[in-house]
Length: 130
Image (cartoon, rainbow, N blue to C red; front, side, top):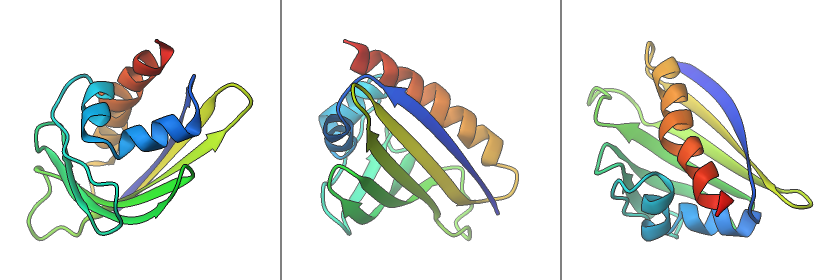
């Protein structure tokens, strides 16, 4: 299994990006328009990028941390879910979003690391710059 961590600086409040992650409309908007269906509740299921990503909210600590079981349609049915842990750290005039992605099937880690940067963080930076 593989794992990695990445961090992005966003010009917004931690509360805004945290709330946006759990909002279907905002999640869709800040990832470039691909459909997302999210849940703001622990135990709630979600999908993103037109169903390519699916999972479940494991733990939610308002405006601070989200832990999710996460998988893509490329996972083999026998693969365990991977886990993402998002930390939202409010600084004076920006937020640091740190993502730790673990339990990734062997051989897929670098592709997902690039995917987070290309399909999430690049779009999120643009979304929150406005």
